[in-house]
Length: 75
Image 1 (cartoon, rainbow, N blue to C red):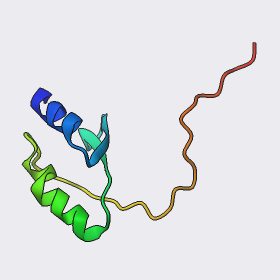
Image 2: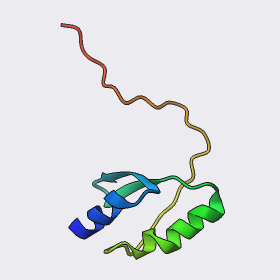
Image 3: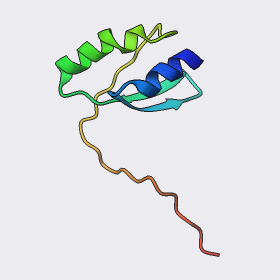
Image 4: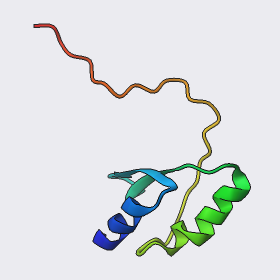
C-alpha cells in the first residue's frame, strides 16, 4: 500500500488519489490528452503500480459542478 501511494504521489498524470471503502480501494483521477494517451498511461503506468490487479475506468463527459469549499453554518 505504501509503495503504491508513493508511486502515485510522484506520477505527473495522476492528479488525484482517494482511498475509499467499498468495491474500489482507490479512485484515481488521471489527466490524459485523449483516449489513446489514456490507454498508454493505463498500460505504461497504472497497471504497473504495485498491488494493482484490476482497473475500472470512466471518462468524464462534462463537469456539472466542482466545488471544494464546505458550507459554513451561521451560528
